[in-house]
Image (cartoon, rainbow, N blue to C red):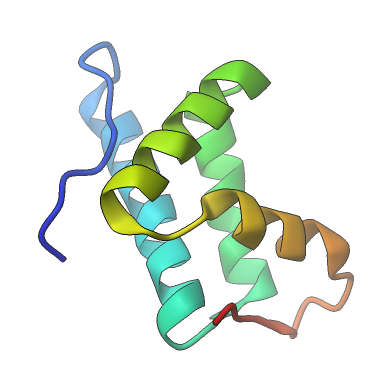
Length: 91
């Protein structure tokens, strides 16, 4: 992948790692799929860094602009699923 992840200079190194790991999981959702529990864990860590809906939308939009991957659609599918062993995959 030849793009930069949307990060804030206000975040700590640990927070940046959490956000990057979440976006890497989103990439995997499109490439080969991710188990629901793993994606949920990454999303929870992401939400600790980006708790507000407005900021989440902004970061998701920035990520989609540079990568072409929709974190919104991946999280929507994650929330619609209730089976922990389900693989979350998007085309």
